[in-house]
Image 1: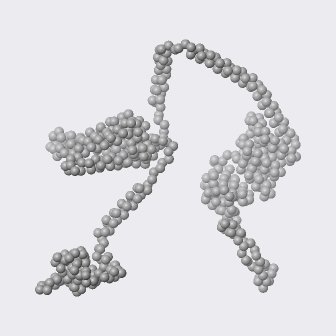
Image 2: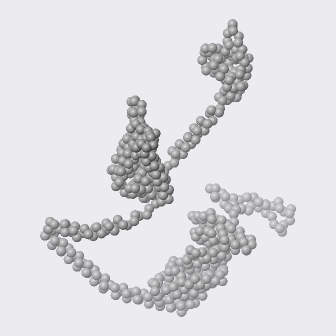
Image 3: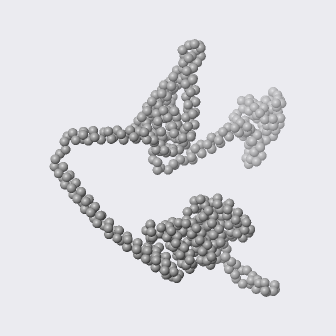
Length: 574
């Protein structure tokens, strides 16, 4: 509805003319005004989508064409050559659609100068049709001369038919004859099969343009080729029949031999003989496959690291739940058995995942699996022994022993091995980031590589939970930083004049402290307003804020006095 109104609005406008006098401008008439796009390009065809680069290129070429010619040449040589193939072709087609044939010729010259360009007869046919509509026959002949200069044309029947029909419609007989010469030089009618429809279109068009001799020559050539093809098929038909008869006889003989074999049962050791015959061939095939390199595939490094992190978090969750089970027992009971506890949890994860030929929970979530898991068992053993050795040496204080003692040397050896392991792990991390293989040293040692479980599955990772967690963490840290800097009493005193509740100083509230809302044990009066407070509440507030105001009346407190008839002590505020 909006597009209909926009394209069919009619406004009341005065009809003015240079030949009429000025006093006649009072006469009015209705003139339709079409509202449309105000840029310098025509409206696009419905269902056709141009990229932003192609639209900008069309606009730039048309703008430069209306200006200086040197700018247009510079634009064609520098700017258009940077476009992609699809955008450059789209620019050419859009200029043709808008009947800017002179600009389309220049853009087509840029297309022909590109490295990726190959002779496309469809583009030639579209350009010839546009030039014929605009009445530019000399440009058509020049274009066909350029095509003749390219040499051999491709065997594209669709593009060739479009070009021939465009030339015939433009009544360019000489150019059509040149196309026929190009077809002859490209092997049409000699080495390759001639399309009968192309030959008929070319022959009828040349005859209509007055080239009866060339049309008859084309008819003769197509007739000769059709006769040769028929003769070739007739010679091949007896051979095909003989081959079919041989196949039928072989099938009947095999069926009869199989029926005869079913009557006599095979010997009992027949499979043994067959196995002995095929065994050397199978060994040679297995040996050749063992030396072949694995298929080069690329696995996402982010998926692999996320899978390892998910496995670690799952193990930590299981450990937390297990510790809660023993929370009512002696504190620190599980601390001395922490390496064995971690090993037990890792064994559970390994037992119900890799042992039964399934991926770990983290790998399953990331669509990963191990390609080779033969030596995965040693992974948990080595880690458990090393963790127990570290814990034992730390409790025994091997590092604090004498310099020559055995524990001291064992401690130094452990530290060196650990340092070497960290350096090797860092090196493996760099190699993993470069190649995407083997996240840790254990996987590299046992050649257990992670690959996709389902290669055709899309990667579906939701970062919603992670983003929410990051936002709340940052928000909580900001509150922990800002809350100690805020003074609640100062904020309350600032907002108190704007408060609508003014009944805080009623007679019933005089018996309680306005700060702690309890009956004062040691009552003191705030001067000069004489409101009663607890001594501790009033003293702490006066010490914390130099300009403390009464919570009931918002008057500044300059002193405090004990609430007693016999003792009158006035203490100045510090």
